Length: 359
Image (cartoon, rainbow, N blue to C red; front, side):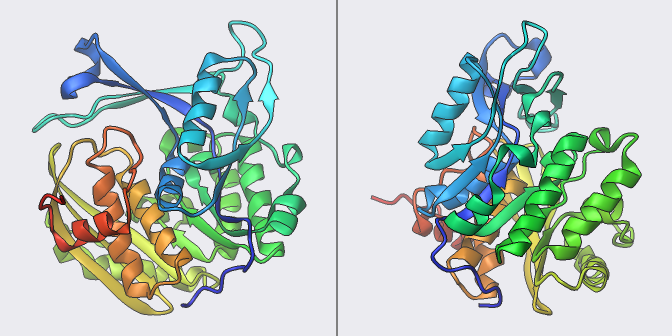
C-alpha cells in the first residue's frame, strides 16, 4: 500500500457537503413536459461517501440544515439510512424568503435526447458553512479520520465554503489525515471569482494526497494544459490524457495518486466508460468499455467512492481503478444519484462483466 492511513480512527472517510433535493421525471421523460416526479436527497460528496458506507466503513458528513424544515428532516433521515454519522449547524429559516436546501431539477435523457440539469440554489443553507461551526481538533485529532474528501462543488459554492474546505484540508494535514480532492469545475460557481478560487484550489491541491478530475477540471481549476484534441474515440486519446496527468503530477508533487475518468457518450443509454490512474508513478488503465446507463448522474462520484474504498481497504493500486470503474458503472444503474452496492462481490461481478442472476 502506497498511502499510509491513520490507525485507530473513528471514521474512514469524512466529507463536507451542502445537501439538497433532486426532482426527476418518471420513466425518463423530459422535465418540462412531465407531471410525475421522483424526489430524492442528493449531494455530490455524499454520492462518493455512499460507496464507502454501504460497504461497511464508518463515514461522517459535515453539513448545514434549515431548522424545523421538513426537507431537512427528510435529509437527516436519508443520511441515517445511508449509515452516515453527521453533524452541522441549524439555521433559522428567516421567513418564507430565507434559507432553504437546494433543488436540482434533472431528467435522465433517453436515446438521442441527452439529460438536462437545472440548479435552483437561491438561499441555499449550505453556502453558510464555516469552520467555526465545527471543532476540527476534536474531529481530526480526538475522533480521527483516515481520508477527508473535498469536492470542487462545495469548494466553490460560496466564499465561506471555499475557506471552509481550505481550513478542513489544513486541519487534516495537521492531524495526519489523507486528503482527497476531486476538482469538479462548474463555470457558474467560478463566475467573478476566478483568481480567488484558483488560489484556494491550488493550495488544497498542493497538500492533497489524491487528485481527481477530468481534462476540463485540471485546465480550468489548476491551469494545467489539457490533452491534445483528437477524434471522438476517447480510447485513442489515452496517451494524451497520460501526458496531462504527468503535467499535474509535476505541478503538485505532494500527491501520491492521480485519476481521471474517460467517458464517451454513444447515447443517453449507452456510454463507453474507462479510467486512468497514476499511483507512485505507475500507470493503471481501464480501456473504455460499453455500459448501459439508466441515469448518468453520479457515475463520476461512484468512481471516486470505489477508488477511495479500495485505498481504505489497503488493496494493491491496480485494484483501486478497477473497483472505482465498477462502482461508477454501478451508480449509472440506480435511479438515485448514489450507488448502493450490496457487497464487494456485486462490484467485482460488474468489473468481470458477469451480469448473470445470483440465486
